[in-house]
Length: 490
Image (cartoon, rainbow, N blue to C red; front, side, top):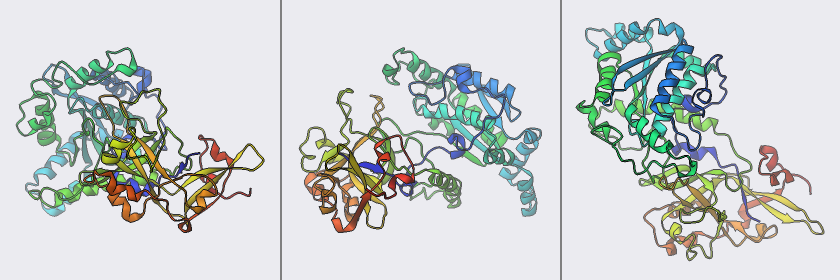
């Protein structure tokens, strides 16, 4: 039998960051009446596998929601280079919608700070609302951007939970598609294939921002393009948002999180006023904390499910999600993806020899299961094994990075070794639990000689572990909850 991971630990997820929690997390949300869902309007949910909404569909949705919601005002901020209207959704509470001109005036006064005393500035801040700019789709091939800005607008006009209502009362959200032409082009190219599995973002015959292509963000300092001119006018001449969230996404083949947010790793650009990066961190940190607090523990992670893994990234470490079952891009889809790799042969196996050089990872957990045959019976008794007294540890793992060209997600496997005396009484193998001092060496991207890291792959001493029988409910992958790790009598 093979170990089943228990509870990938939430405390290691600080490096796994996603878009602002309030724009994507559906927790505790309740849809407001009379708001058309994306699926009702365009036939699929935003973010569905193998589906991408075009700018034409964005226009359909935003106009629909503008007509249905008193939280939203839809305006065109100008034409794109290809002649499409570039829309901005202004979202705030119905009461705030009545005073948009006043809030825009206050934002301008505070931005210029001309002729204001400290007392007057504080009074304006109390009267006004925080103006928050969120755009999406700047680099059209980074498709999360265009889809998230549509989903963000839907969430903000449809949800009625207390936190969303507080955002609507306190803030004015300016939601903008930064590259409408690119979204239309990339979505059309991607969706042209009727076979879902053949859909690809590659080999587009045209630039997905007229005259510029991918690096259209370089135009913001000079405003040559119509889209850039539209956005710069709104940001720096009309609305003066206090928070600007310009959405990007890591490129193809990146091993880090698909979406990320502050706090960012030091050092920051020392040409900036120190308050700038500090205040950026103040904005991002609460959302990271929100995500970490809300990440539920798992008690029964099964093969083929997603697990958090820790990988080397830009001189540090980053936590990303990977499917449990090692699947290199060259391996046939029909081949069973191995969930374990033997420490004794991992460096010579064709399947794993490249990964042990370049793609080693940690798999955080605080326990695992093994199954012991019951003498005289056909059943097996599951046992829960952990560090003595409990605590977080890391399995030694290998992974394959996300491959966007092949449409392949990141995958991983856990390395096993000969068992210590405790585990040997239950099973003939055990996962490698790395010593704390070995974790850095195992994830050091500069170490590519297997001989340097193979000594890390040894069984953890039995005296540092404990195990006990648990309910056979754990044998069902769909079963979850803390009851699975409670001791039971045999």
